[in-house]
Length: 135
Length: 233
Image (cartoon, rainbow over all chains, first blue to last red; front, side, top):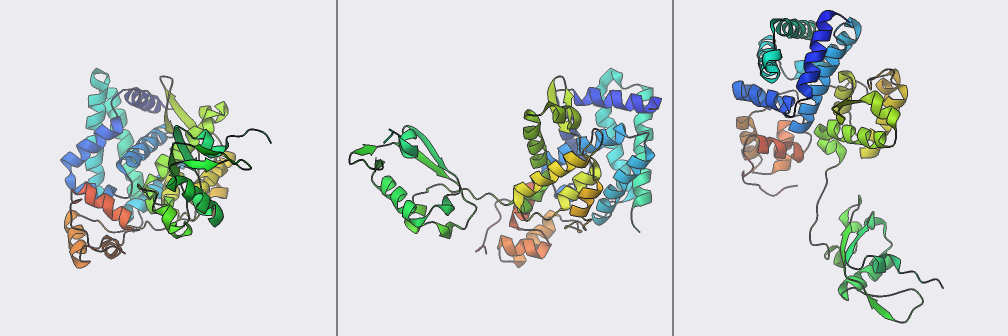
């Protein structure tokens, strides 16, 4: 496992161990900032959506260094996102909110190393999704 | 003859739950109705003495309500219709999680492999995104039992710590186009309702939704729950 992978995993475990529901906080902030995204999430109930979000995030971090697994996971996501007309710009919005909520959750533990690791992770995942999005 | 109180006698002072009441033969439905109509009076088999049991009756069925005698049906004051799993596919991740937790209660190996634990508490299930997406899009014809079977297939064929989309599952869960290709906003939903004269089933069809339950959730999401409802089909 790369050093970046370890940093990501330690940080996400710390966030998910907190009493406050991270996924709930993430979606609240996302819809507050970008209300136009809300209709895209109606295929799942909010509880299910939050659970799936956490599962996917943990999976992507667990297999951050396993490009084959990462690509398999992303391919399926890309195909779903295409049907929802998700644009490249939206990955920036979601990534921005994700980093912001992570930073708040980690407080003083959100140092430059952790921030860089998550920025690189989000860039890697969103680039992969865009690469695999059907034309 | 052994002294057996029977279900109705046992339920005295509590609740009698009759599962699959729709399968109850008509003759037994008549007996049950008689007990209800006579304030809980009943006779044990082979006994002349009349007894009384005070109980609350709760029943469930997956058959059409027409399978019950109409006067027995009328005795059920509160009715709850639970949509099939296919009608509420958006709940699949939650149901899957619950099924896995239940299976893991009696199986420590399952718990350790497929459920993340934080501070001694079970957190999320470890499900690979490919599998989660396919399960969400799957058309369920055998309801909860089908999801339970797919879960056990995933448990049996996955390697490592994640439930994954194994070849065995891929054969059962072919890739499907998501059922909702278009974005829906409050304006489109309102317009569809107007077009359907308030009929939510028709409005759901116009919007390309799976069913009216999907529309109800949208109405809730957009704060349109109070939208006037017409004659529903």
